[in-house]
Image: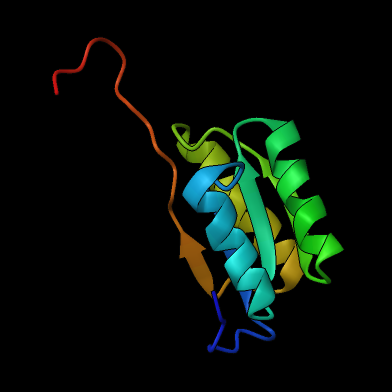
Length: 104
């Protein structure tokens, strides 16, 4: 996919970025020049996405947090701002289901 938007100098936080759509959103922003905070509830997937971004010449860092916890979400924002000097774009990509049984 061609990137035709320049996000150079932008700071981006992507939640649920350890796999799937979130991973590709994070990689897209990095290819567009953004610095990306890669969040996942697990350390290994977040680190793998950061490695892929850095291997492609981008700038990223992993953030482990559970987005069901408001305090941890506040921490994600604070750490992103501290690391990048601001936050320009936040993508809430976390997929969460409520506890218990769901009906389709």
